[in-house]
Length: 156
Image 1 (tube, rainbow, N blue to C red):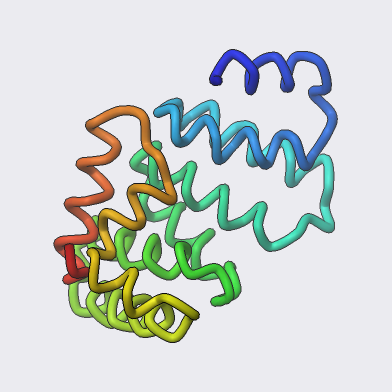
Image 2: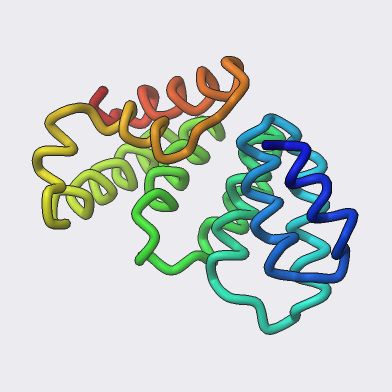
């Protein structure tokens, strides 16, 4: 799959939406710095980018372990992305801002439970749900995210 992302970038390096999507995919493949570079390029190419560009960039920055920058991006993301609220909790936890991280985690869990089927999803475990939704390929990235979720008080 990563070869397809690399090929898409090679074939059309000026397609902002493709680069923004590549940013997220490369983050999931563990290539955080390349993911960040793709996200930055996407935002340069499309200065009126959609909010999801920022959400994907925050994910890339988190994967690259650039937590202060990830937080700066995350606070710009509207709250309608549920995963982004959980990522905000994770980023704050990694910055050792645990009280804030716990508040974000509580807000994220409440928002998840308010969705249709969300109570059942939360009962099965929020962290596993998030790992399923954000399929980090490298175990070290999965562990980094899961550890941050635990630190923030997100239920398993």
